[in-house]
Length: 131
Image (cartoon, rainbow, N blue to C red; front, top):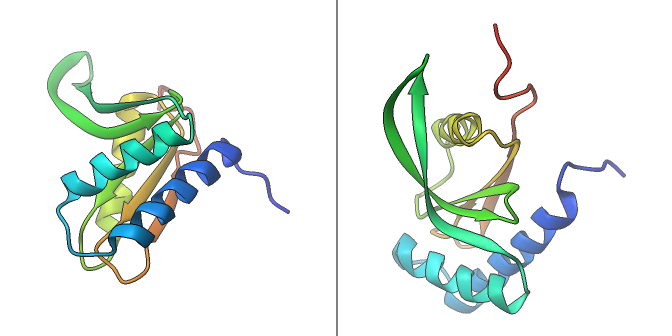
């Protein structure tokens, strides 16, 4: 069986997300799922931060900020969506978030579908490597 970076942690987050989706189903705003997932993560005694603001740099200049939905155990970015289906652009955006946050693993969770749709996104190279 293949081992994933932060595999135990992402498994716990996915378990919490499946429980939220099982009880709420599709149809609510992203903010409702974020609130419910926060409750479930707390019940599972997982440490997390919500709406974490990270700076975005171009070369050495800060050109903006972005707010991440959740960071669990300071290692896994969790981005919540309520879209028809996850698309390649969502993966590309998650990779950008990982680079900006200097992290390697993200979970994209889509609560708008009949069954919870999720994707594990990993940044393979060192986020701060020079080209």
